[in-house]
Amino acid sequence: MILKVTIIGLLAGVIGTGLGGVISAIFKREVDKYLSFFMGLSGGIMLAVVVFDLMKESMDKMGIINTVIFTFVGALITMYIKTKLDVSGNMASGYLIFISILLHNLPEGLAIGSSFMSTESLGITLAIVIGLHNIPEGLAMALGLVCNKMKLSKVILFTVIAGLPMGLGSFLGVYFGGVFTSSYRSISCYSRRYYDVCCIGRNFSTFKKCVLYNWFLVRYNDCKLYIKLK
Image 1 (cartoon, rainbow, N blue to C red):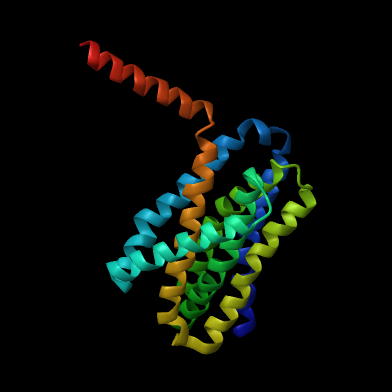
Image 2 (image 1 turned 90 degrees about the horizontal axis):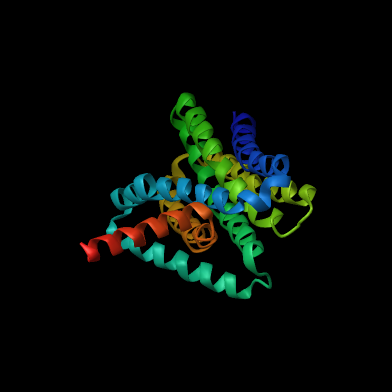
């Protein structure tokens, strides 16, 4: 049972983020052209997950005050790590997201393992959902590295490594049972706030350069001018 759950959690993490790296490798010739679009898309997907699901869950389970505290903790740690990284531009985005995925895949693995202790169907369902939502995470990380001319083999390796902690978390979750149920909420809250800040601070700063963003900006300014003239 323990081995089975560990393998399922490991596959959910590695395949999810790894697929993001593979997708970036497949479209390597188009990365420079569509980088802003995919970074914005990945950031939007994860931001939607955070706002409409994770934030609500955090407030329900931990309260508004704790959610706000962990949000600021994640933001401050993100800013600190960013200043210490000797990288620039989109490479910094890739490394930041890599670190954040490492951090939050462990508590998500704990959730998978603990869910299997409840019912097997719940554990499998959660593993599938987490694996799917790891794909845009891996893609966002890979795009941040590929655009700075990092070797594709190294990029894919990074995305695979990012999914490994989920296997460890699944092992710990099923081995210790419900011990991690409460601690998962606080750890998950912190790590997801960390990733949220990465999405907003890096992905959307890149998305601002996108032609689509500029088009909407021009239309918005036209509307303001029209209202003033009217």
